[in-house]
Amino acid sequence: MKIAGLRVVSMASILLAAAAMAAAQGSGAPAAAPAAKTRNVVLIVADGVRWQEIFTGADPALLNSKNGGIWDRLQDLQREFWRENVNERRAALFPFLWGVVAKEGQIFGNQNKGSVARVTNGLAFSYPGYNEMLTGSPDPKINSNQFGPNPNMTVFEWLNKDPEFHGQAAVYASWETFKDIFNESRSQLVMQAGWDLPYRGKTDARQELLNELYRTTTKLDDEDVWDSFLQVPLLDYVKSAHPRVLFVGYGETDNWAHAGRYDLVLHSAQEFDQYVAELWREMQAMPEYRGSTTFIITTDHGRGSGPVQWKDHGVEEKGSENIWLAVLGPDTAPLGERSHIAVVTQAQIAATVAALLGKDFNHDVPAAAPAIADVLAVK
Image 1 (tube, rainbow, N blue to C red):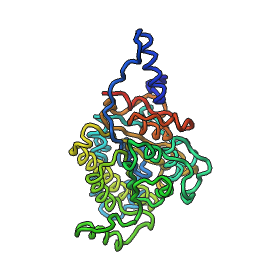
Image 2: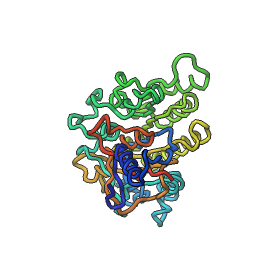
Image 3: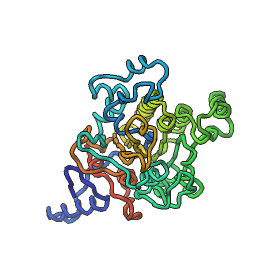
């Protein structure tokens, strides 16, 4: 099915269409589909990053002390992030996203250009959002970040049950609550979340130094480790274990927004972009990942707009349901910034992760939203 330029289908529909084409051509067997190149998928989330910053860069209404909580080095901040041209401004904030991902892949969610990406859980905060993106559908029972272990099976847990991916699905995230979101005890996923020490057993001097920083660094939040602290063991794990399916969750962007520090929102957003670029470069330098890895980059919810509302999100902050989504990989056509297309939903991410790996999540979880077929089109 094609709706306003965006095809939204399940993996089963793709296979049925191939069979129908083969029959129409008089073939005795289904026509061979183009060989997919993706063998690994990395789902990366920057918590609470607004679509406005992604597509228009730094917000001029917040580049001040009154609305943005900026009390030092304002001129330096303006030199770093402000450009009159919107394309230059967003590239200054997210150089990898706009210099690589948007040129070689696809990005959705610029409402100024008729592209809408949104959550469907009706709550627009973290746990409901992560549940939706990872299980393929919202769960009205999950209405608190303190809900506890997730009763729903994520696509990561589902893939981990597959012999092809068993033991090769991992979660590296700054927020401790991901242990519940992925139901660590039941799913048996490799898990590094929150302030848990990243290195166990026998450690070398470098590893023990990072462990010591985890133990002794003053915490902004007891549940959220600093993104920079997460990046080091993440890269070590990728280099040593070569996971096939990886979730990476960065959280500082949301924390600084709640604190009302727009300057630190911008700096942590730019650092997020750098972390994603670093992970992409490291993986592309490895034969296990080069030319066979797809990144899906997104957020769990949006935020409000205005001089105060930008700090928060949820049903009372209008616009919090609006998100963004970017995909870069060997099976995603380089269509760049999408415009004037049908709505993409957070719930479609789970089936998209599976479909990129040649798996049909909807077959076992029919309640899950279908994959976004435009990002599955082989280049």
